[in-house]
Length: 76
Image 1 (cartoon, rainbow, N blue to C red):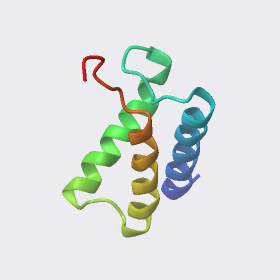
Image 2 (image 1 turned 60 degrees about the vertical axis):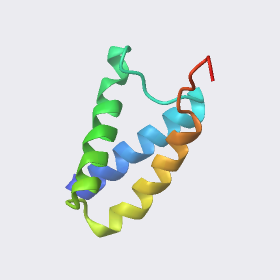
Image 3 (image 1 turned 90 degrees about the horizontal axis):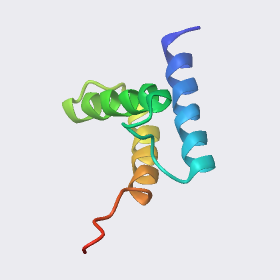
Image 4 (image 1 turned 180 degrees about the vertical axis):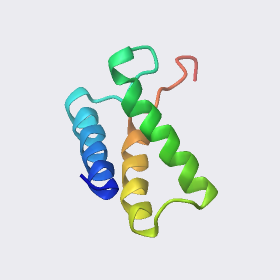
């Protein structure tokens, strides 16, 4: 399995998790740590300009999806 195939597999895993559970991966659940760490590492790589150009657009789509399920402050 190439690096691109692994990246695409992880991307699909995160997308399907969000679609099924209607929330982002939690830092409090150990079984979701891999997905959360993948998201954070790729966000950091994209912000630093180190992400491959062909991945940037698809990852930005994922970030817009995660923004929909972002936690809100209950007092707002």
